[in-house]
Image (tube, rainbow, N blue to C red):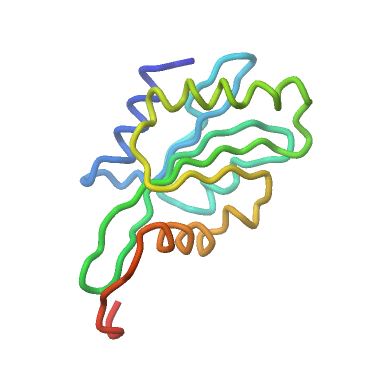
Length: 139
């Protein structure tokens, strides 16, 4: 695992002054490396394919018009075409990634792209965050 690069990408997503809102970590041969970072959600979503094992880390703005705040999501993706032996290794791989990616509000484990739509992720974060006390007006 490329600890330094993964740690730097994680820190960049968490940095309030950075435009980077996501990072993905993929396997190249047997090594977990940074597969990409960016700010465009569609690009983030494009990294999750049926034949791959991927970890994603994502910044989501949550709250109501009175209180906006960044929340973080860890995604564990194991595509439906991943071989059984590689699938079985995901739990130990997730333990390793969590040594670096330690702070997140929501964890999503899936192999369905519908679970990784922007609206679904935002709704999951909002649900995990509890009540919103806004006025019902404004953005």
